[in-house]
Length: 288
Image 1 (cartoon, rainbow, N blue to C red):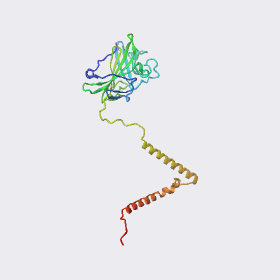
Image 2: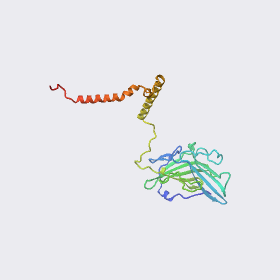
Image 3: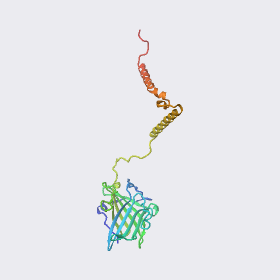
Image 4: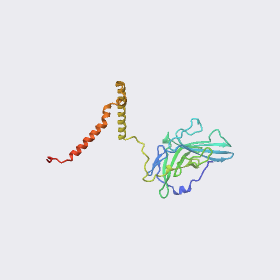
C-alpha cells in the first residue's frame, strides 16, 4: 500500500490543459502557448513523506532537479537512482529510529543522459480566465513491480509570487517546503507540486534582464588606445632613464613638447580668435 493524497479540487476545477509538447530533455527552460518559463534558478530539492505500516514506518524521499540531473553522492553505491536521473523516489522502512539496511523501493523518472527513453512532456496550466497557473511537466520512468507498470512523475510548477521555490525545512523539520508531495496513485504515478515565483507569467512591458553580453566596439577601441598610450609612455620612460639617465619630466617621451603644450594650445586659441574677429571686418579701402 502506498501513501495517497487527493489533488487540489480548486486547481482541477480551473485547470485548462493546452496541447502537450515534448522535450528531448527538460533543463529548466520551456515555452508553452507563448509563455516562457525559466526554472534554472531553482536547485535540487527534496520532500519526505511518512506512511505508517505497523510496526514500521515507510519513509519516501522524492528528490528533483529541474535544471538537469541529480548530483548523486559518491558514497551511495546501492541505494540510489541511476546516473542522469531528474526525479528520484527512494522508500525505506524504519523501525523506531533505525532504518532498514536496504531501500524498499527505488524508482527513477526522467534521464538527461538517455532522453529518448524518457522524453518529458509539458503543458501550461491556465484557469477559466486564461490566467497562467504554472507549468505541468511529466517525467517518464521505467516499468516497475510485478505488474510491470509504467512509472510517471508529474511535477506541477505552480505560480506563487510569495515564494522563490528555494524554501525548505531545517534539520529539525521546521519551516515551509516549497516542494509538496501530492499523491502516488495506482503504484505508477507520482504527483508533486512546486510553488515558485518562476512559474508566474511575466507582466507585459516588463524590462528584460540586463544583458551580460560582451563590450561594444567603442568600448574596446577606448581600452586599446589607452593600453597603447600607456605602453608607449612606460617604454619611453624606461628608455630615457637607462640611456640618458633622465629624471622627473625628462623621463617622459617628448618631454619638451609636453612642457610647451599649454603654451601651444594658448597660442592656437589666440590665433583662432583673431581669425574669426578679422573675418567679421568690412572689406575695401579705409577712410583717410
